[in-house]
Length: 589
Image (cartoon, rainbow, N blue to C red; front, side, top):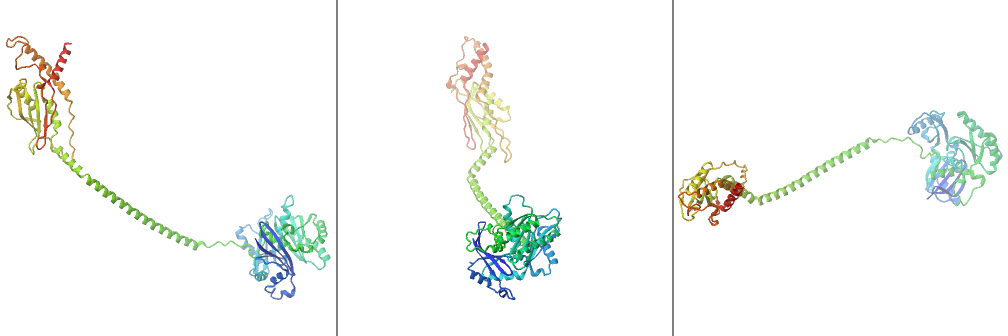
């Protein structure tokens, strides 16, 4: 909270209060009245430092700020009727209108105005404009500088008293939209003001004649003259309430006269009841208390304003639209610079990202190269296998085809089958085995000759006594194979067809040979050379009596380069005979 000094700057005296503002309240600490002697004013006005010396004589404390109210007759006040314009255009229009109505140049005056409440019968707008001389404001500023204080505001007493009227009417029940009249006597000055909706609508001032009785008797006539001037502009104006700012000795006389003249309620306006006076050390005389209404209202407007006021130091001005062209150009330049910086930053970030991506790809490329290098032996092995498959023979498929073409094992069986291919020579099979008869050997050669896949080399089978049941030996029978068509480079070789199960082949062979065995058996039972029935030659043994040790396992050998051997199981005669017997039993049934 800071101390503030409020002054009523009168021609003959200066009345003021020292107060503290804060918390929405005004706390008055001191009040004083300083006479202004004509000798003190001089031609150049008050001398510098005069106010500071007078306050020091009275023991008034220092204040950091000063607010001042001026009498109505120190200013030029007019109510102006203007067309309907926006608030931003009002200051320029008011200044233009006041320049036509004032005899003093507007450059030598301080101007401020109050926008008035709109009336339904008024098509445009109304304002209350006031001007004061620059010289007077400069004199006040000079005295404040002598006190090392800042002049915070300069207004009219009538507009400052509006704060008191608004607060006084707030405690009266009923409608507050009517018109109120304030009559105030300040020493030899009489001010009359009309208030409507909390704002000053009309203001009038007069100087009273000397003598208490003469001054009191002059109040009512001045009020009448003021109302006549007001009704000349507003014929339908009706005063609903009158507030008086006079001494207690004059209150009864003035109230009675005004009630009789205006036929309305008259009430005293207590200016001191709106502030905190607990800290006030020197109360003014009752006859002088009304003179502090202006300063007290000015203090209230600074702390908690409720009404519009005038301030010639900080007047309402035309809102000058700033020239934004330079600012826009500056912003545009800054924006362009920011955009360029952003693009450069984005480009650098992109290049950095690409460099990082390149490094990652290089690392992945090195890793893949290492993986490829590790897999090179496998690739070479696969290449060799592919070359072997394309250049060689599918010996598994060849073996399956060869076995399918062989007669049943009761006539011929092989103990080994060598498959070989050496260099550019055609592939060949070399068979080793046994047969019952030379005819069986020839039938085997004929069966292979029927296929264009085989070419059987001439061979003479020999008879041996190693096996009485299979006396004819096949020893090194060569069977050449036709060269298969080589696939094109890069093409995958065809997969050899799956070999049928060996059991099925043997079963079919057994089933096919069953009738032959039956016929052979019946032939053997017939007496060919008049031998007893049931007798068979010593060198012939029935198929179902072939010893198991006489049925060797057929093997096959397959090789590339240096002739590799492969073994293949051969069907045993016992299994075939057993199946023949089962077939014969089924036929009997």
